Amino acid sequence: MHRITDNYAVSGQIAIEDVEAIASAGFRTIICNRPDNEDPGQPAADDVAAACKTHGVHFHFLPFAGNTLPIDVVEAMRELLLTADPPIFAYCRSGARSTVIWRYATLGG
Image (cartoon, rainbow, N blue to C red; front, side, top):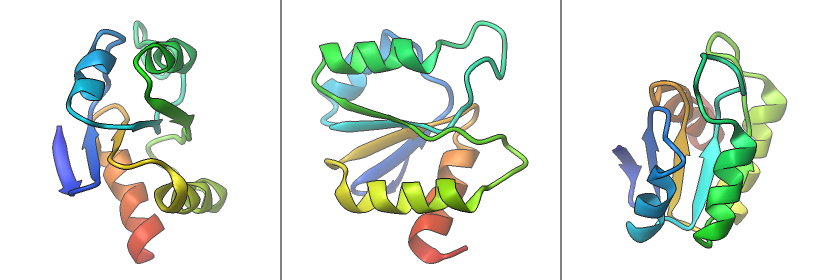
């Protein structure tokens, strides 16, 4: 995990069993920026969402491919950063995508 701000942290792919630890660390929202089936064996977003529900954490699925940054996804991220319960934990394959989208959503690039 890498903290970007007091209310936003990123990491690479999480496992279903990581959700409990993320919730215990105080995170109230998890955002997945990774498309399902990007790599074999990664947990599906729906399965992470179910684990989040079990642990009282909000879940949002804002996927985009690593070589793209669609404006509608940036705008959705901007809205989430303003309205989601902090602190927020975002993940993708390595954490880079979740860092880049935060930068564009908050700083404009």
